[in-house]
Length: 100
Image 1 (tube, one colour):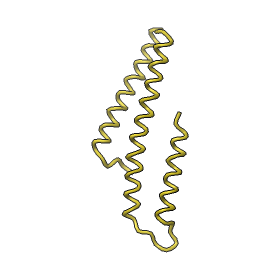
Image 2 (image 1 turned 90 degrees about the vertical axis):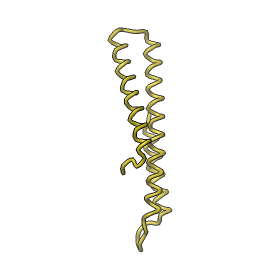
Image 3 (image 1 turned 30 degrees about the vertical axis):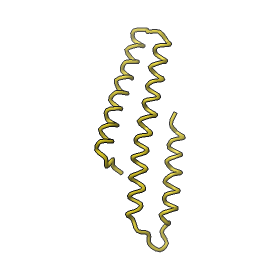
Image 4 (image 1 turned 90 degrees about the horizontal axis):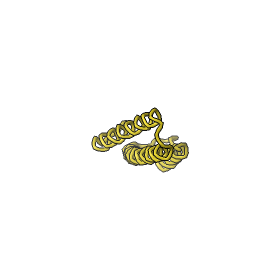
């Protein structure tokens, strides 16, 4: 599945680049032997930014998957749209559970 909404894709890329910059900043802070509290504060900000980005991605992913399911027709012997939705939501929750 690809991200359909270009605005969402650009937003995610911007956020990831910002996170990348934050991670590089922490590396520099470690090299410079900065105060532990400052480093921890930056790591917490990175963690929060990753979670926020994950939520945006998940929302887009779920929306697109549900829309695609609505377009599909189910034939005899195939799982119903409802059971496909339930399985998709379970998979998404499992993915969320794996995030730190």
